[in-house]
Image (cartoon, rainbow, N blue to C red):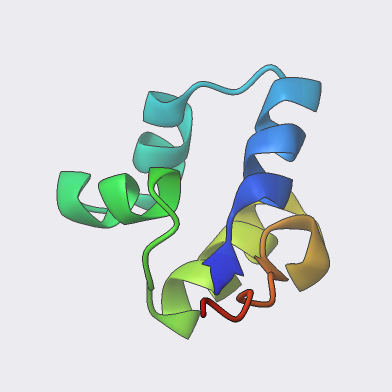
Length: 70
């Protein structure tokens, strides 16, 4: 599973609001919603985030292993 928790932590550290990210990237509300709910977005969006925020990909996204549900 993909999580954007690192992005949310970075936003708090830099005192950025959700709308700041939307405006900086020029992304749609639907794409922004995906970021806040840990849904898939394109690598282009991830690349834009890294470029605009001057950070590395691990500062934006992380992989979380799914637990086996039995």
